[in-house]
Length: 67
Image (cartoon, rainbow, N blue to C red; front, side, top):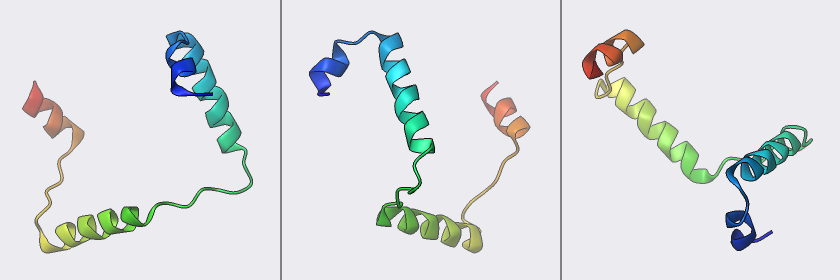
């Protein structure tokens, strides 16, 4: 299947196709490995937490900020 074929599908057909692909992936015996850059992002986030650069907010605080 190419992008032109995907673009010619209706939204509901694309969603159904995605659901079938997701279901197939969930039942694979082998899980895909994460790309190397994921570890870099996680390490940077951990560094920011440990250095105090990162702030954490509750969901209620976020909601009230954008209300």
